[in-house]
Image (cartoon, rainbow, N blue to C red):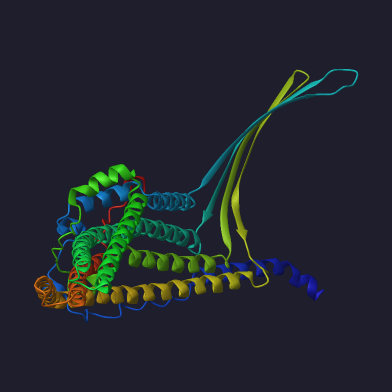
Length: 476
């Protein structure tokens, strides 16, 4: 009897418990995620070139006083498949963002049906059925799942956009590096051809002197060997230059004949680096790096996905509605009817075997991974800028001594060659002086290339002055 009296209140208690749990869950928020670490340094430790005066990175290539290089870079950034690939990823991410944004609103589906049937008995009776209807569904964002999905999708779209910028910066730096390699190779080839021509003349002179007894046969063979080595170096350098041209064809997608015509405009001329400075504070430089911005967007998306996983553990409230019109015609009689329905649906995850908790743990682990990647990217950016600045400073300190050494050894070689003609020096002395002079000349050319390589590395490390305006921003 006592149980009979208590039973009517049992369903009420269950409902009250569910409502209390729902309200309590609404008041809960996911545990706060740790903030990423700040940049590891507040100021560069390496010496800033030109006292760190600000420069426009977007005009970087124009400052190299080489009209061919910017044209090749523009061509590559327009036609290279890697850029097209990143643009395709960007369109996918933006489409996903639009799809997620649409989830916040109601969904309405329409349906229509028409059918006709008959039996095969003694009398023929035709049955015609027709109906139209509409079903609407709207998920109430109780715990922010829809909002967090939108945040994650927006961050992923930003990440894809920054990836497009990063691909353009990397492609420009890669192409500039190959271009400088080619121009340096052309200069070195010119030097080697001059050496080969000089050694060919010396070989002929030594051979004729040996024939009349003024030089030993051993010296004649030494001169012939030196001339052969010089010709071999010329052939090898030409092959390296051809390989650089092939690489430029790949990067620019231009036909080799068209590319060669453009390259002929400044044959064997290295771009003239007109150095310019960078902002003193690293934050201003790091803001120029699209890979840093992409890592930050990845971090934001991962944080939002933690919220999505947390929200999936709580009830879902969906508002459903339907409206339908039907018509039936049988044996000349027609009848119609209208049906409608409206009401909420509450989905309660009661038992999932720990799946929800595991998904939250996995989402938090992905966030921790993104956070560590972001901090690592910051530290890597500082290191790359530091290294580029050190290389620039070191090269500038070596330039004067390198040129002085080259001039002195060039004069010494000329003097030794003249002494040999007068009989005061032998071929071995001339050969040694020639090798030293050639090495010094090559060192000067190498320093010029090293300076340009350092500025290209600094361009990449400083983010390349990428334009923050996204492609086709109107469709976003």
